[in-house]
Image (tube, rainbow, N blue to C red; front, side, top):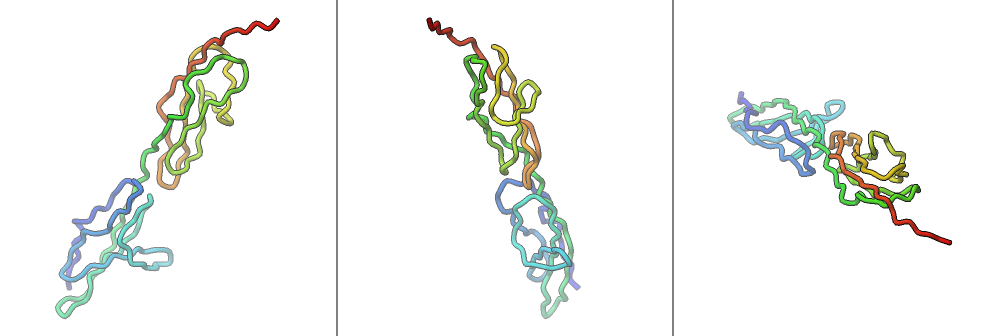
Length: 168
């Protein structure tokens, strides 16, 4: 009976959107990898992409000289840290006392975003600045299938006094 050596397999990855090739096991005969699913169903697999734990059956084929052999390993694709794009956040306003749009942020994995100004969560991307001054904006992204939940670095928003217009 032959032995399967799985020590050459990479069993842990971090999600980056690219397929992780399942390879690295060795034996005296050809190796095939199977994804073990619900009800122990098996599907030939060559790679995994999304975050999660995958039970992989490694099978070494029968030959004239060797009996088949198999081993089970778990390949884990960890969720990635969240990545934010805050380029469309408006960083300065003139004080008007009315509601204004602060712009918008984006995050990976179509995460649901929450905007937080001076530790107050907003219902939308519109906000009424109460006073002239500086405000700290942080964006929170909820966990997705492939990304961890996380907070952006803070952004400073400056609200300045507008120019008075005399109408008379």
